[in-house]
Length: 435
Image (cartoon, rainbow, N blue to C red; front, side, top):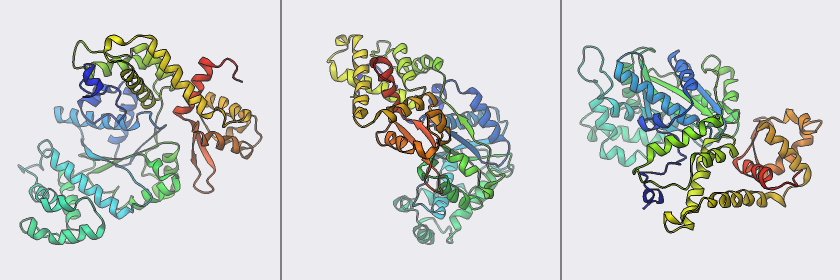
C-alpha cells in the first residue's frame, strides 16, 4: 500500500507527470488562463503549427493537454466551433527514427484516437455513421494487428497490410492502403480547415539535442504529415530548440511564433498545493507532513519550477515516512531537519570540485537564471571563450545545463538546474562565509 494511501489520499498529490487531458488535469492547472487563451487562438487561426517553448519542468505539456481537453469538452457541450480531438498519444522523436516510420506511427495513433472518439464525433452530414469506421476498427484492433503493432517499420507494415485480406473480411489494403483509408476518413470527419482536427503533440524536441537535427526531421515531415487534412500539430521544446526550428526557410509561414511558458509566480504556490490536496485526498482525516507554507518555500527555492518543487515535496514525504511508524510520531521540526540535510548534501557533492572562479560564475548565473555566452561581460569576462571553461566545470557537477549550437557545439542557452538551486539555497540559508 502506498504511503499516501495510508495517509488518506487516493493517489500521490505530488505526481510530476504532465497533467492529463481530462477533467482532473483541468482542475489541477492553476494560473495559466492567459496562456491557454493564447494557444487556443493560434490553434483556431488555421493550419499553421502551434509551437510552445519553455524551460524543462515549467509545465508546457500540462498546459497543452488541458488546452486541448477544454477545447474538446466545450465543443462537445455547445456544438459550436472547431472540433478538436486530443490524440491519445504524445509523440517524441529521437536521432534514430526516420520520418517515414514516424509518419506511419502517427497515422495509426490518429486513427485509434478517432475510433475511440467516434461516439462523440458527429458523422458527415446526411450519414448516420462514419463509412470507414467499421473496416478501420476491424483492421487496427484485430488480434493479428495487435500482435505486430509494436514494430511499425515500413517493411512490417507493408507485409501485414498484404495479409489483411484474411484478417479483415476482405478489406483490400495495398502497401499504402491503410494510410489512404485513414486520410480519407480524416477528410470525411474534418472536411475543411475550420471543421477541427485530431491534434497531435510532438514533445521534448530538445531530445534531438540540436535545433539543426530537429529542424531536419521537421522539414522532412512538412509535406508528408503536417499537411494532412484533419490533423493539427503542436510542437514543444526547451532551451531554444523551437526558435531554432522556426528559423528554417523551408518552414517559413508554417509555424506560429513560439508561445513562451515561464515559471509561475510564487503567489500561486499556495493555490497549487491546496488544489492538489483537495483533488487527491480520500478522507477528511488525511495526514500530510507538509503544509502550504512549507510547499511555498520549496517552490521558492526551486525558482517556480513546478516539476522540481513537486519532486522535492514528494522526497520530503518519503523521508518522513521512513522516520516515523505512525502519524503521531511526526513533529514539525522534521521539515527543517530534512531541508538542511537535503541542501547541504547537494552543496557538499560539488564543494570540492569547484574553484573560486567557478563559484563566482555560478553566483552570477543564479542572478540571470537563464543566460547566453554573449552575456560574458556581466560575468567579468571579455569574451565567451574566456568563460567557457568555468561553464563547463559547472555543467560537469550538474549546476548548469546548456543547449549547443548545431554548427560548432558552442553553448547558446544556459540555465541553472534544480541541483543548482538547492546549492544556491544552501549558500543563502546556511553558509554565511560564502563569497
